[in-house]
Image (tube, rainbow, N blue to C red; front, side, top):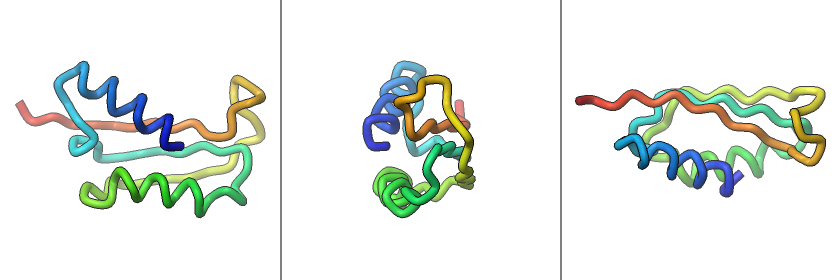
Length: 78
């Protein structure tokens, strides 16, 4: 999860935004029993921002080795 958020952070920085601009996250996991570990990582990066968050279990992701996928929405004031 930390790896994923770091990749998101890098993509946002390329666009002139940051994790501070994230208003919503959606987390998809193939193993909901990992929810507390996933939530802990989410909180580590978004504790100050506190975006709306949804976490759901899915039967599988595009790559069978993937356990978590994260989608974010960010709004940057210009």
